[in-house]
Length: 295
Image (cartoon, rainbow, N blue to C red; front, side, top):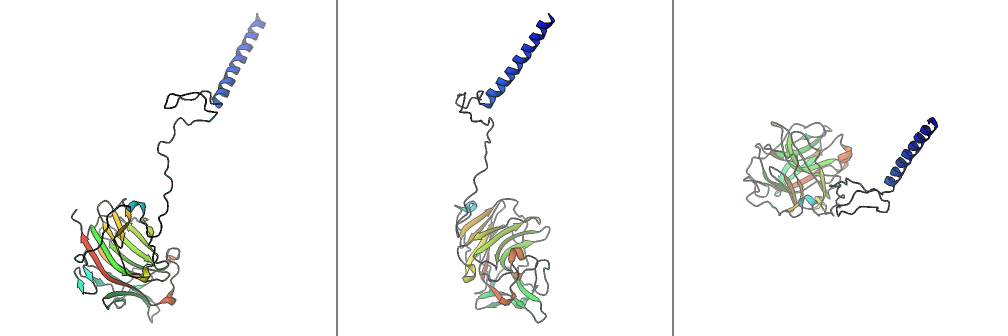
């Protein structure tokens, strides 16, 4: 009896092991497949099927726009140009509705390697000529023109020809630091004026840079550059065509309208080292515009 019991236990153990082995083998071969959405089950040729496929796979990287083509975010948006009425600062006619004035005698410090000088913001032959120079004191001097008041949502634009020189910036932008740092930028990096950089800051947080390939060299002629600042987005324009749109964390505080030219320090990876052998270098502006939004 003891022998028979031992034999039975051995047989049961062997059968159990065989069942486990066969089940594992069948699963690995795909014999037990979950039916698909059409009710079909069974073997799929040994292919392992993911029972929970990702319903939202990552999209394929978007194709890089060709030079001059808008970013996909701006495709299909309507054109926008400044009207004559919106040209609040016109250097050909002398119009200066918002009291623009030239900064003088101080520096922004930090990455700005120049002191603002009103002598470097000169109106001549219907143009504002904003220059970077080097004085007898061996210091660099730049130029900045700004409004006294602040302005909110609307279309901001300028007709300009940026300077071409490594290590410097020509710009139109809006800015405030009261009560917080908000800013919206159109910046030309003199290292490559076939591109223009768009950016913005909301409560001091930036990191929204987008470098748009113009398809032409901006330093060779005048073009209109602008942005439409709305409550829920900013749309940038080149010669009336929408080319880029931002929708995240948009600035909300009224800002001064400003334009400047300056050379950098400590930002060679962004601007390249400043090439002072090119001095003096000059950006030119025909007019600046602002059209307020009603919403």
